[in-house]
Amino acid sequence: MTTTAPLARAAANSATRTKKRFAILAMLFIVTTINYADRATLSIAGPALSKELGIDAVTMGYVFSAFGWSYVIAQLPGGWLLDRFGSKAVYAASILLWSVFTLLQGGISFLTATASTAVVVLFALRFLVGAAEAPSFPANGRIVASWFPAAERGTASAIFNSAQYFATVLFAPLMGWITHAYGWPAVFVVMGALGIVLGLVWLKTVYTPSTHPGVNQAELDHIAAGGALVNMDQPGTQSRSFAPDSPKLGYIRQLLSNRMLMGVYIGQYCITTLTYFFLTWFPVYLVKERGMSILSAGFVAALPAICGFAGGVLGGVISDALLRRGSSLTLARKTPIVVGMLLSTSMIVCNYVDSATLVVAIMSLAFFGKGLGALGWAVVSDTSPKEISGLSGALFNTFGNTAGITTPIVIGYLVKGTGSFNAALVFVAANALVAVACYLFVVGEIRRFELKKAA
Image (cartoon, rainbow, N blue to C red):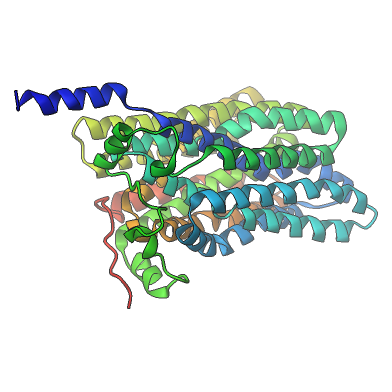
């Protein structure tokens, strides 16, 4: 009797367990979709905007990079804010601010009489969008770490990360049509207004595990037993009270001195180079190199993104399946990353084919590989010190999104200097190979890093 009673209770708890963590994940997916759609507004509106303002490829590269500069600069302060004030409030402020700055970009059309002024204002607004979005992905990582056990974390991280591809699938055709029908300023107005509404919805629907009104104890016990940091944002808990009053250099030095983490950080820079190629120059590539219209490019850009979305979800599913079948965490996380990055190098083949249909097919394969290998946020959730997970995620994102600065500028110079995108595709594919090298030869065993408390 005493032996079977605990088993019966466990079975009952499993049967009645709520699944509110999946509703939280759905919100992360939706918010991240809008996040990436707002990043991509300029790439869709760019050909028409650059023609109207008379912007050349190098200048456009610098304008594309404006987001990356501030996004990187604001990462560590954003991570500290998350650790200090919690994910819900900081994320809500982030959504509302980046949406307002996106909406204001529609007003650039009134400055076209003075092109240089319009460029400066556009750069400034893109810079502000980047700063406002800085806490978003570290917050995603924190929320997944608090709501999901380790055996579900790879899939959860892959799902929110795959929103970047879904954003292109859903919004690239829509923004292409809006640009064609109403002009490029309308793209910024529509996307900004949509984000403001979403920010208000976020405040009404997102909670920490222990404060969610719909979660039951059985679900809390399940995710806590699996390693979820359920009390991460609760006042008075060790993890919350340990958050420093300001970002301490000692903590950052510890993270940077760890070989495993540095391999992950550098690998993420290389992987994010692929992301920013698709976010910034890919639609321009389709228009200027392959002769498509802006409307056609918006729809065609969605095809590789569909493959990226499928690869992104599949990468997380494969990783968690390997983990459940007894593979080590290291093997489970590295396998999709390495295979995916190798597949993404196929984009170089586009330099040797003329058929637009074949180019789209090859780019779809490359984007599928990029999605398959985009498990960096799962690795961060597995490795970050629990006391400063926001700061650790922000440092990871700082490295990764430095590519948001370098990629648009480097590609701009390569396109202007060579007159084609051939060298640009080689540059992007080379970064994928460096990411493979990082995970095979630098990262080593994937495990949670134990922080030494600074004095």
